Image 1 (tube, rainbow, N blue to C red):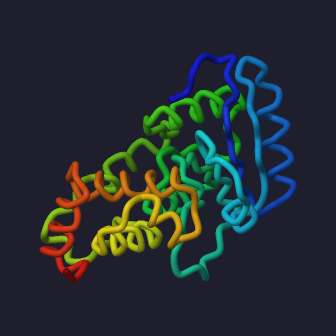
Image 2 (image 1 turned 90 degrees about the horizontal axis):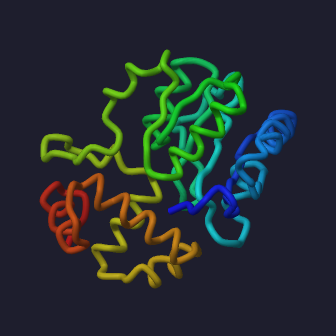
Image 3 (image 1 turned 45 degrees about the vertical axis):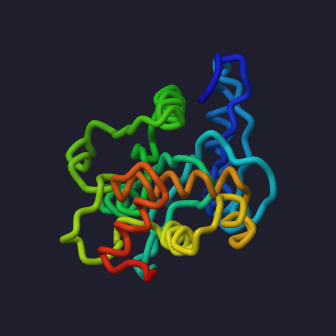
Length: 214
């Protein structure tokens, strides 16, 4: 959890457009009441960069996200994601991919800062115009009728498979070439989405759903 406002706040800013990255970095740096430590870059750049995971990820989905993409995936940086979107279509895609917060790209810096702090503390944040999307299933426990693990991200499905092999968080981190902190984040996300509290329960439930083979 984040400490007082005087503690460094680790933020990763993901945007494919360098102009957008620059504008967002400047807007956030002007919020003197919250000292940000910002790492910024493209999704590929930041996912492959070493270092401790951030407290929160700010993900600019772009002005016109590519319709050619088969699947939209949130940045895999071991932290909750606040997505900046251009419209409701982009918002639905980002929410379905696992974003914890949705704000429009023209959001005021003060509102953006408050949203980042809230998402970092485990809350969900929605622009009022996107409030109806709160009803979309995202982190709710999955029932037996779902038929396929669509609510899990591709990385979470990898982690679930490794849980079924009995691997520890450290072993999962080594296998996937990620930090142990990031591995723990993904394990907790899998448990939450399966509606269980223990790793063994997650594996048993996933096996009953036909998602893994024991």
